Length: 375
Image: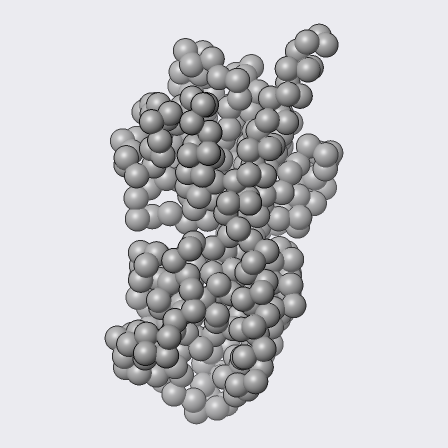
């Protein structure tokens, strides 16, 4: 998941956590295993030794080969004290102790949201990963409870390490906001959605809600969508083409962090109404940027948002449209949300998360050594 210019939730977590851990522990030798050529941007210190292990694992059967054949072969050479797999899978064919990081198990609840071959493989193998791992790390109390319940795993085996926002996000000046709006929307205020164009991100309801908002208010506001290639989704494209407001929906693709932080910071509000999330980093990014947030009242999002966002039923177009109207029309509400959001953002810090993850690493190694000594 460490791909230059293509970091998403898992990749950001891995990048931010291990960059800090490697820097903080020069006395430790780290081995990073990639399935393809890698960027030196992800080799975080001189104490990192990088390996490229074939094959490139982007299909379930190739992932099985990578984790259960290729990787164990290299692990025997390295003989690590602990193996950490940050992308929700681990090796079922090694005796070295492992920590596996599982952000969420959306595929258990909404298997139709991903290709059937992936859903079948994840549903079959994830319980095996959870039982094989010495410890599981996840990113919210919601996901901890979900994993524990779904796979009958003791909650004592699962630790929570929160995500956070990139330090590039900050409150923009009025002049900076005006400059961004001039470039993006011709000077108009806008709502912003940031995320991969994936069914659970719920654009299939956000778009009709925005159209309903436009019809009810005649507002000149725009909706800016930042994410992966949009027009491959024929269903969403047809929604836009069918509305008279299609020119008010602006898709700008993927942005680098520096530019994205500005586009988020200039928005009137961030709208992130996913119906399933393990965490929801865009919520915290908007908080840090001083932008009001509309989000969902389900899964991990209430846990992350606290009292700092308007929370709506993500399955109700009317509820989403009503929240858009409330935020657009009420300056006092927006100011209140900004103040609460800035305060809430302080609860999520990559430095603290990295320290917590390191504590989990140390505890796991101690537990394994104690168990081995006992045996």
